[in-house]
Amino acid sequence: MFLLGAVLVGGALGFSADHMLNHNPRHWARRQAMYDDLGLSQTQRSTMDSLLDDRNCQIFTVMKPVRPQLDSIRKTAHQQVLQILTADQREKLEQRVKEAEKRETKTTNTCR
Image (cartoon, rainbow, N blue to C red; front, side, top):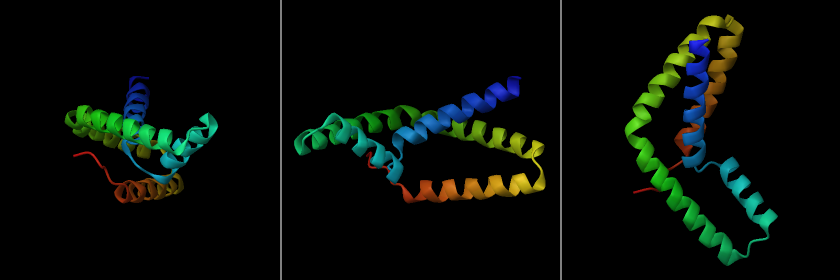
């Protein structure tokens, strides 16, 4: 039960941080959908982009010192998950992980 909790917490923290900080197409699509739903003008959209990007940079700065710990938690949990999967399931999971890593390497962080 403890391991499951660790996996879930580590995954949630890692996902939340990545979700907040990565400028991937799905992130931008959701942001644009929100802007459309709110009916924002172009000026409002630009201002919102600046505010949200600044917030993301602040979060990135706060998360940076704990990033290695989060990565370690994620790696340990991943290894534990692999142990319970069949060979076919491991192969499928590893393919998904590779695809996610490709997406992450394509994203850039604009924080300085």
